[in-house]
Length: 393
Image 1 (tube, rainbow, N blue to C red):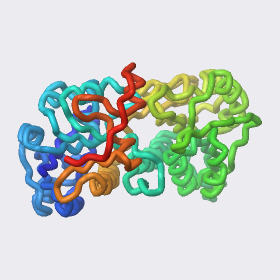
Image 2 (cartoon, helix red, strand yellow):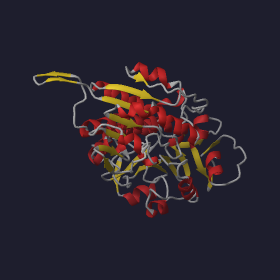
Image 3 (tube, rainbow, N blue to C red):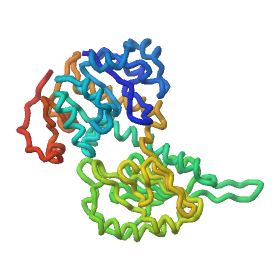
Image 4 (cartoon, rainbow, N blue to C red):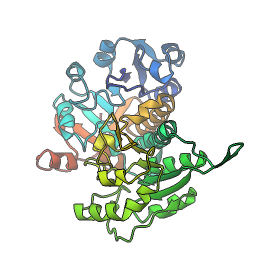
């Protein structure tokens, strides 16, 4: 089976779905890798490295037209991300694997389903131990949390660590991380490495131990948060009254912080607003907010996706596609996740779709011209489909 890797076309996207080191692993599965010329260059993987590992480097047209399986980061994800010409290249029976933003943009999955494509959304990998090596969202969140702190350190008009200098003692920066998922925990760890005094908060009670294990202080809010976590380990959306009370009790911590890293996001929904404009006004001039939930609207009321907002001397950064800012390691992790996922669904060069397997069942979003994932069908107002038995292609 030919696995094609196109160059990403999303604005600012520098990652690539397959790196040279993974090509031999895909060959062991019976996959011949065909990659678009220049697809890996912005991530630090030039064409000769792919050729050395056995991949064939060719044009975009040949990749999309000749591949039986298309491996992408996000260029073919949905109609609002991928250019129309890319969608028009997809054909009946072709397989697509990548980030498809299925919960946030189910209509995009519908667009590729109408092409007769078999599509797997890596965004929906379940958070179970068996799927850990395939968890592409978590690997990219690691990059996001790390980079968010570096953005803050680069913008903050002071240094992070405690220092004894010829000019006297410099006190450490105070960093407050909101959200202790993978991105938040990596942000805590990175800020601690840089010498900051770090505090962390998450709506999920189970996150307390993880925050403390990284040497940060847990911010405790006197509020009960029952059912704050779903069975997949993600935070659930709460009602607006809960978020209002949360903002009120969080205000003192926000005012005392030099840096706030916002990472609180709920898959497929608008990010909760946790920092109001009046809370920003209470911060010290020169303070920084890095809101990596910006693509989902942001956790700060002042956040504007892709923009820098300055108000009363406080800078609010709303970076988007943060993982693409560290494309080499982000691509390396993503490619390994893809290879591990393909090892589950490809046997001797053939696609095997076993819908009795939880990982396969939860990532399969389109097949036979239909959106088949129950949550997406519900979001699109479609009736549920009858359960399917295991199948092979």
